[in-house]
Image 1: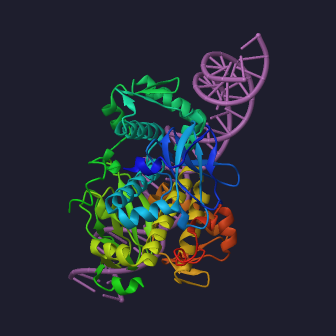
Image 2: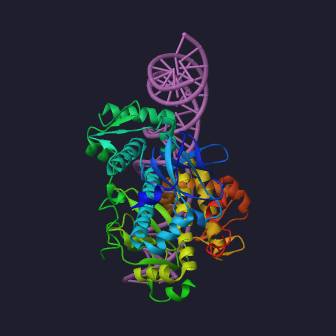
Image 3: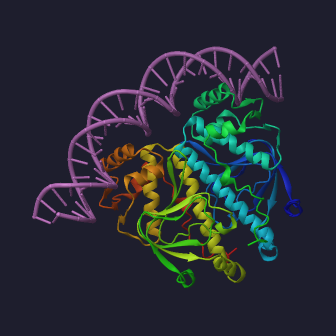
Length: 225
Length: 225
DNA sequence: CGAGAAGTTGAAGCGTGTCAAATGCAGTGG
DNA sequence: CCACTGCATTTGACACGCTTCAACTTCTCG
């Protein structure tokens, strides 16, 4: 359903490039068709925090055009194919396609829930749990979009990226990954992640997938109830 | 504009009570009319994280009824007067009141931005910065709703609450507050916060208020552009 | 084949957490 | 009005998880 509209204007952005920056006037909304991107923010002194990761199928900032300026930046990790959804697209949807509008609202809610779980992660989990949790989340999200094969998925993040996402230093990320490897919880080499036993990884990350609301992709919501 | 609808069903919830809990089926959306509340989540082993604070005028979880179950809980800090907004309310708005619908979407976006700034806070700022930032945010938000008098506001959070919001231990919260007091950045006694020099507090918290999008309350947005 | 980026390692320091006990404060009942 | 209870705040001593710094190694790619 989205595909039809999305096909409109797809462009390719190279790896490690900003799609939009803090302070910009928001224009289009971006749908990630292929590749990985991330939302981040930085302090004056250079400290950076990755706030969310966008995987194929994710919509970056629904409704942003309502705001006067962006309060964060969005950058790519890999080369990314993005569809640019103009404001008119959303107006049209909300005027004539209640089912799709509901699906979009559902997407927004799930993204918010994911961001909250990240806050939980940073506030309450220690390094190992935090890393395990992040890896679980990414694996499960990729699985939902059919981007895993058995217990394997592509994993383009560097250890420096993981550090900015988890609020740890790169050195400690390295040591944490080694610990996870030592316990056979993951294998991570050559931009490829293998999770031999997802349940065990979930347990070490205190990962409870409820917040991803995997029920049935949010399509039924306006139909039922 | 909201008042009219909100007046419908206002009820009072005592302090330190859950309004809704993780796992519940979401029903109504809550508008805080008076008092403070918070969104939180906890791990199996009891660690708790406060994810957001709701002040008078805030709407707790727009559109939640789209989800099958709550992925977090909401509880009160003080006694709270809440208006319960039924699903029908939102349907009505989005059908016939585009301006209000836009204002509601704006509210959602600002809340999301605030939650993201909290992630930034937990991931990148140290104890002093973190605490200073949180106090700045609360002070400014209260100021926006006219709930400050000069440089003073009510402040019902306990140090244990602050600990759960900042991801610090209560002991360290206590020491951090003492440091802030020692530098004359705050005075905090008897549930009252005084900020003698907001600019200095902002600087020590690396606080940049952009993310609150204070421009003009989001009312003009559907009119202009 | 060379150069820069990504990953790895060790040693030392410090910011926060933990534990435990003391103090202060508010509400309750006698 | 005072003793009693329980919660919030404060303090000290100690432990440890994580950061920092700096060097080294291994990959990746032109």
